Image 1: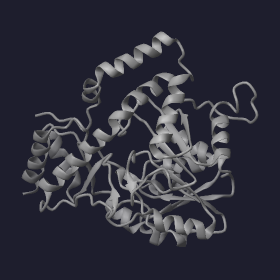
Image 2: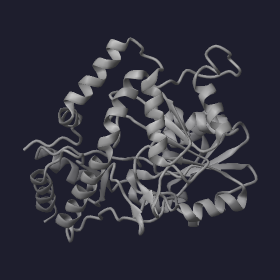
Image 3: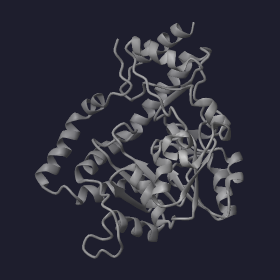
Image 4: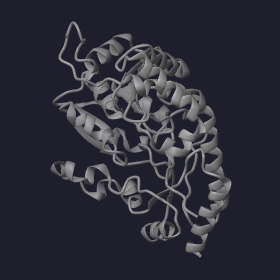
Length: 364
């Protein structure tokens, strides 16, 4: 049996007629930048979250960078972000001229640990970027309380958290702004790069729109960048959006099945924070035999992935900051153990059983 880590073609086939119709309508309309598709998607995504403003941009990294830049983050500032994440969570800080300060992760949940957060705050700290990693919501109540106490901005990184909920509240609705990615493999994915910013702050939304669109295409009120979501991606995302709840339910159901089958196997399985909805962008397990298990699964036709094999502060890009693994004891203890198993809505129950049986075969 061959099971890829992710199968984007299977999703396309499940709604092929709808996707093809949307693409055809964009091609026939002849407008490939801006237009009604952008407006309708922005309105629909904002409405889904109960947020006033959605600013579509070219990708999730730009969504983070533009948000920070328009929040006023710049040289001399520090922004705290998790040590365990994709590099965009930190590179956006550096691109603003500020310094990323890395925080250890909460044991078991992999998200920013509020208990270790306050010790990192200095007079230069201006903002926090909690990352809802793998679809697991960060522990936002204490994070927001710390931010209020120290008058810090909060930018939620929701690249992996479409429809994730923290105590009933959708991720992306709790901070000053939120950044989403619609990279093709995300729970809501385009057929190319795309992203957006959510905020209830009208002034911030207007600044983000201007900055992402060359400072205003006709007026150039400020110096901006070119970070527009193209019309084709907006049409595809608008077409997919009604399916997102069903796909999310499927991810949760399949993840629960994984956990049932792998209970007692010796693997550390992903927990769900109490009162929260984990949407499983990734189903990540921990094993001290991670590399050997990965090789064995691949020999049996099962694709896997590593998210993320190195902590951000230990990457060559941040060597100048001179961080050591000892500064991040929890995350450093995990980085050699984490393995992402195949997970997508079209994965079948039979495939889940085969993957679980193959894992147990290896472990025993």
